[in-house]
Amino acid sequence: MRGPRVWSGDVDQCSARHPSGTVVAVYDRYEEFRGWGFWHPQSRIAVRMIHRLQDPPNEEWWQDRARAAAMRRLSDPEIPDHVCRVLHAEADDFPALTMDRYGGLLVAEIYSATMATVFEQVLPIFHQVLGTKEYRLVFDEAAAHAEGEQAFERRSAGCPQRIQFQENGITYEVFLAEGHKSGFFCDQRENRARLAALVQRLAQQGKPPRVLDVCSYTGGFALNAAANGASEVRGVDLDEKAIEQAKRNANLNQLRNVKFTHADAFSYLRTLQRNGEAYDIVIVDPPKFIRSRRDYEDGKARYHDINKLALPLVAENGFFLSCSCSGLLEPLAFQEILRRAARLRTIRILRHSGAGPDHPVRIDFPEGQYLKAIWAQLD
Image (cartoon, rainbow, N blue to C red):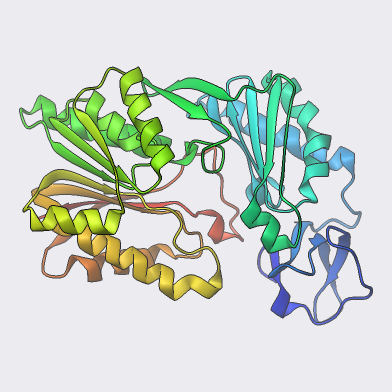
């Protein structure tokens, strides 16, 4: 057992018919104790490991871990203190629980119903350390189905339906009940800032770029390009509600050089190719195509196809940013997908990047480094 997850196919025997969510002791094939974890007999992740100490976790232990996670964010000067991730699942010793901060609001998502109890135990600690007051907890349909449980949502009495905040000088609006995950992707914060700097530099050199943002969601990359000197920005996404929110975000920031289109990205890219379009910067940031080991090959094929369609739209000496948020896709495998997708064009990698330090990664759980971003330039 290398990391914090034990797959169902690796479980040889169980001493009793424990209900889902039971904290169980885990032993290896040599009957040596390996730690404590949550038992989920109906899930492909049979055990989510908690720790390797002799005593099982109690409320005091969880609260100590919560305090440590909060202090890690407060002590890092690179992490903004108003919008960031404050709990990153296994990396912070909280399997199946993530939580983002938006000012005085905490938005948490669990992937196992068991973690709702843990969340209630540690919520007062986060409020105390961070100075937050409201919360929203979500156990969505997909996660509930995987665990054989019922989906639910809980929120504090004063939890708002809509929030506004700023990042890198851009104002965003989020409707909590309608967005994916927490409604916003904090993990792309540093990449959005890097894109803004690239656009600004090109504009200052007298070459304001045309920018295409594929799978633009609520406009994070597109808005940063438009606000920093792009001559024209086009965002496209299949999620109609996300496109409407992106348009509202553009209006909030009084940006007139950006347009958003509700369309299937694959079909739209083919249309752009037929029309002979070319862009100085192309961003491809699709949703998670690989959600489980069962759809690994299909997901890889979709990453290949979308990048194969986008790369010809990059102008000569233009820039290309391709992202993957599939933790099961290894960085080298993702790079190889781009190599195959580029065909006859020369693609030079300028840098690899990912999420910021508020998304730490355990060294024994490389899948936690789920976000991969490849910055490249094409001849």
